[in-house]
Length: 126
Length: 207
Image (cartoon, rainbow over all chains, first blue to last red; front, side, top):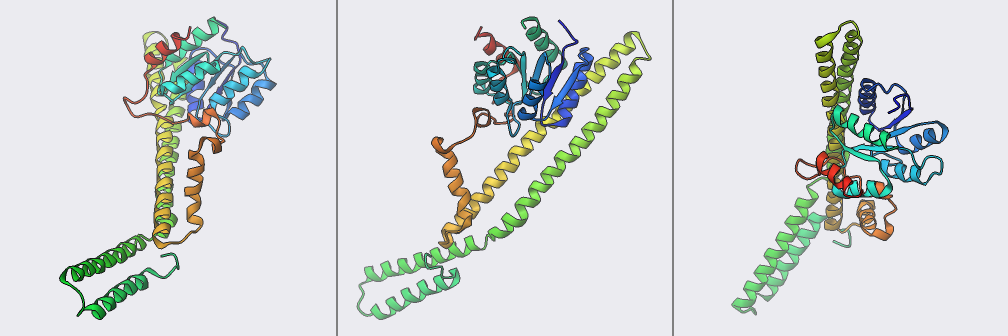
């Protein structure tokens, strides 16, 4: 598992971005960039060279699910590992994310071990 | 009251009219008819009283003062908890810097404690989203009260707009939200959502 990849974390709560960034640092992922909604994330993904997206769902003006669909529809980004970290915990949300092509799904509140396990899983299969 | 007559006047008018009818017919009515008219008079009073009570709700106070005050207080809670959470995170980052100066079991314990604090601090996101749901509910209540008062006073005003918007949103053909927006329900109450292990099983079932 290459820990030198660029990781983009997307969340409209700055505190959450800081928490995820610090947890990633503990997991030795040091190349981390941030976006506060799907639109900003998509612009950064198209302009940059990322190896993993970790995104919240409930954001405006573009939700995490809509970002995921845009990523999967983009020829250059379509194989990007994409983990959803969200408080959305209804079955319909998980199913919709899976159908849109999510690589893994973490429900908030989560622990560091779950984050490590899911990242490892998606990067091994990437 | 479609003609826009003030409610107090309306109530007085109903009562005066019913009394006048009763007085003019007093000698000609049977006991049954008198009882019926008395019932009508009582009904008129009840309607007038209900209208007065609805008017006394002072929807302007609810719309202009109570709801904004409540939402401001809730916003302040989110701000204060965010500030406190960031203070805690500052301390954690300092501890992590100090961790490089120690080694062995102590360093591991310190790392473990800091990780647990990071995990616990995600409460701020969840509580923020829950408070957002409460604010949305308050605004819906405000809209409904405005609509009830407008209907009771017979006024068709701008207060009806939220009702029309709600009706539009309820119609799937008028709903312009994306799938992501439609499914954004926020945190569920304990027992309502699925757990991480259930999500893992659900995802595995697609493979």
